[in-house]
Image (cartoon, rainbow, N blue to C red):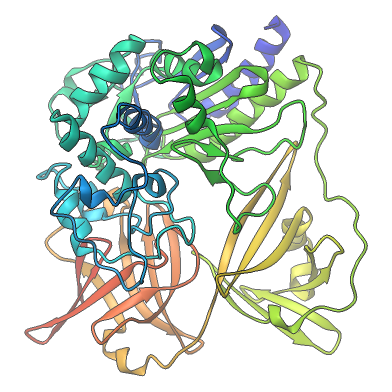
Length: 556
């Protein structure tokens, strides 16, 4: 690695230390660390960040869980395509779908249909991983298994239970003996109410955006990554398993090949992020044959954020670790910058990508008309005398159909003002019908990369008058976790005749559409982390209560 390149990266990353407490970064090529740097500090005493500092890695732990499951698979202890109730005999998940088998394979790919989270469970200090079985039995499937991508921490919690049941060891013990010790690394699985978290001077504290220290409330789904701490050097050793898979000794060659195989699903469009057996493809798309796929995983708690990525064609890997609330976007930017600078050094051009020219098509099928719901916005596609338009937050975009099947949104009215118009310059939209449901995709170009993602699902308005008694504001029963930003400001309201759930979760404001699901339940519609999940309605002593994401809330 050239001195010039090191200086470029140092200068770029140092800019982020003005608003982020600690940042650890590394680039590994084959078996050599070619760039390793520690920025900032890990506690209020401003103890310098260093190679001994341990940060929480969140869902990057799922990579380790997947390695453990695949080790059990190659030993013949578990089967990837058997219903998991074979290993957790008391498991009996409720389902409104004909197909309800939940397998290890579809959990690894986040296509199990299991609900995303039980936020009460993962913030509780008084329970254990095994409790997830009871929770899974009380939580209906959100989608038919394999029918669509639906990220699930509950699913990876159940994988942890399977590891415990079949190995007759605790999850942490099995991981240590079979994954960590062979790699000569150490992970700390520490409940966040543990005294050790304050006594160990190497464990990074968790910082808010204004650089105040807060306890991270996540506790229990350790196999999904709620409380895993490690050093940058530990992640470097783990990443080497994938940079040169033929040299690793953890799994047999055919097993590691299975883990590294890129999956195909018909509901994926060009460049959309897709989960394989524990690893993620297309988190970054450089659209260069010399690079090929960037394979990765992210790890995000409330305050700690990690990026873990590698490129097989070049035998190179990249890691970013941060300990501050704003680290999600920052870690993504730093990882991309490290990749770009490394690729330039390999004489791979890093010119900004832009939307390629395509002929336009005059006739647009009326079938695209409708309302599409995402986690934060509704998209209403409607027809006017001069063409088709998409309305989002009262901004009008005229849709121009291209020969390649994508729509170019052209801002009109207020949306065409300088304040908004730049938002749509590098965006293409696509609508695809899958399983009789229309899905709105977005393809966005940003510098040298592009990303495609599902934005929203088609939804249908329905008569929800019988649920009017549920409308109003809700407070958490017997718990106050406002400071943790897990869930607050919850209300159910009507907007344009549709029932909506409005809430803040992990610092993001969500506005989700609801539909009836029986007399005493509502289902979250659209596309997003919690879509398909069920809200249970209860009336006790004249009060309206709801069960939402594991929490009980009372109407104020």
